[in-house]
Image 1 (tube, rainbow, N blue to C red):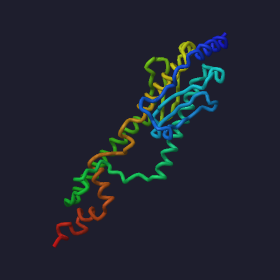
Image 2 (spheres, rainbow, N blue to C red):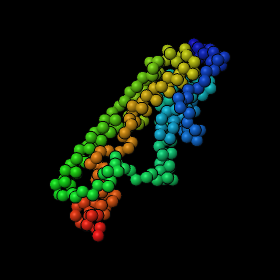
Image 3 (cartoon, helix red, strand yellow):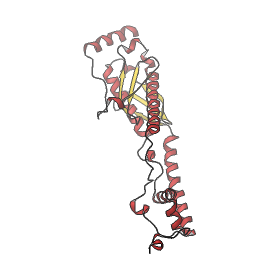
Image 4 (tube, rainbow, N blue to C red):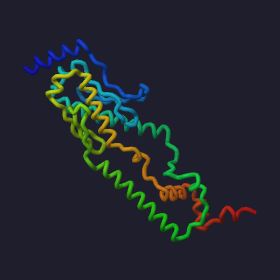
Length: 240
């Protein structure tokens, strides 16, 4: 009976094939990275930053996989796309090394030549340690916890841990009645929500803060550090 029902629904879809899901903002084709499950039933397209752009099901996908197993194919395709995006990032960094990070430094902090005594250095290290602890706690809250999300339509749910999709649930009664485009749309919605929740803005830039910026600025400019701690003459002393 189930086979006859799937076949009937496939005939309906062939009569009116809806457009595939796509990203709201166009992304150049070279920057669209695809991941697929082992059977090629599901294709998930992401950006180089692993943001989900589109989800597509193969034509006549119900003949390739039992719809009750679609959730496994979705998870596999999404994870494959994420891994491919990470590989692209590693390759891009190797080809084009990034500029030295600023760690939140400002022009004023970079130009600071005021003397630093022993107590000043201790206070600076303590402040930087506190800033680093705040960042570490925030990152751990995101990386270590299991994050779940539900599509707007309420028919698809998923969970992510450590950046990997670990669970996808699809309403079987719903998936048996709707067209492929509707399924793709809700899959795109839930995968996008999971990505956004597991990769909040700010963490990718590393720890930030005035104390960290000042310490890193001193490390990258050892002569200025030596001047500020009194190991080299200050700029004012060097002038005639």
